[in-house]
Amino acid sequence: MARGGFPGGMGNMNNLMKQAKKMQEQMLKMQQELEEKTVEATVGGGMVTVVANGKKEILEIDIKPEVVDPDDIEMLQDLIIAAVNEAVRKADEMVQGEMARLTGGMGIPPGLF
Image (cartoon, rainbow, N blue to C red; front, side, top):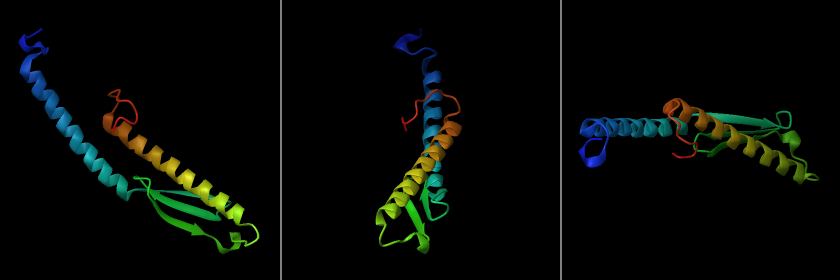
């Protein structure tokens, strides 16, 4: 082991720092891109549709008029909850897929970034 306790000396440390900076820049770019990417979830045979972005922000909710029944508000509420949860799940999958692409098998645990 080299003096100072770092295997490979300062050249290795500089290389590691460059790689970390590059990954940080790629992460920022990916986060910006994910804000623009969207996912869509539809439930109830197309009665309720929710659109979310990669930041898990709900951008749009479309409710077909025929599903609005004043005597059965609970069904509409259930459909909205299901659609929102599905959109958030899809957004999570999209983010995880992009992270896997970025980290490329580096063994970084999910949720670390």
